[in-house]
Image (cartoon, rainbow, N blue to C red; front, side, top):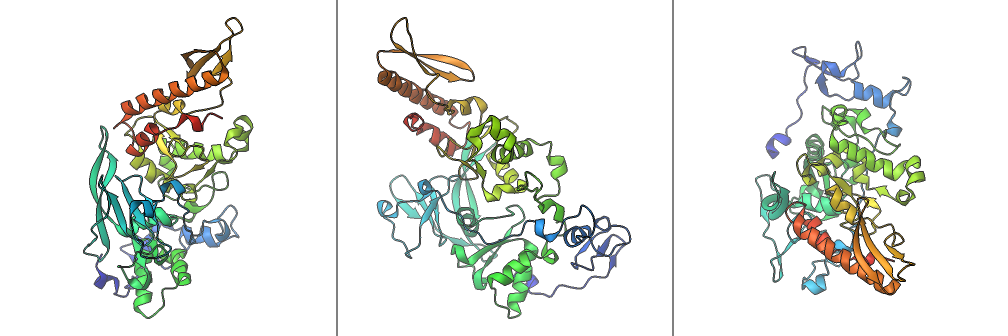
Length: 422
């Protein structure tokens, strides 16, 4: 983006432009004619958002309002700086692992670490043509055949937002506002993910002498005036179990897509009372706030899927005992592999054989049972089950290398069966 162009005042467009667009008298946006109801000067988004008099329309109170929220990184993702030999630049600085990159961490001050096999080193930070700080990391991607690491240059602010800030619109927030327009400052409390139009509005007001307070920034973020022209209010209404929303305009065609089915089923497991009656082990499950937006989930699904292969959305492999569906805790994994990590207790796996007096041990996968062996005592049978399943998972993990994301492979390889056996 060109800063000179952004400092220019927005030009006033005529009411009609070649009979193709029209200016909404409520929000001031120039929109295609089809975005207006016949004989109305307000666009459909403004009418659905502000007019509570029309039956079945959306009012401001039930449209998602963007607010400032910070993430709480999982303890297992936080680097032990003393053990790593890293000196912090502030008392509150800490580093969070970037699980989609190769041995990389980002701090809440925007410093990037990488482990080179011998020691932790700070990544070289450069400046792009827009003044943003950038660095190059090894990103784990699916190349159409297998999972590989590929060099990727990325803005530092994106890494900070990913690790520390709740991003309500990952697809739409293509820009970042830095406090006082200081692009050298990537401290997590001083950056705001915004759309291009919102960025331009903040920059214009800041250049005209307004302080970039949080109130000013979020007034712009939540104002229809500064929404992108393809924004529809009804896509931000909580329509799925009273908590999920679509967040995109192509949702109607997407509802038949695999990613939508996975998203809807996830919310059903978390928030459907009917599901909880039959599967009470989902009662404590919730969805991360970013994943309440289908558009956000779909973006993650695209990056974590393996082409058109059918997969399960798993919440337990990366973080054993986890109850929250989100980017830091979930992975997409083949159904067969996923069933290996299911645990409903040992009652059906260890059975006392009355004829032999021994404990017969099996391991169940997809309804089929694998014979483990017979043992003289319950404790011996329990240890036999643990050792057998531990070795089985490691063998499967080795076969899955390159077939699943590297974070999933590592989690499988390091899985501790004892944690699932009480």
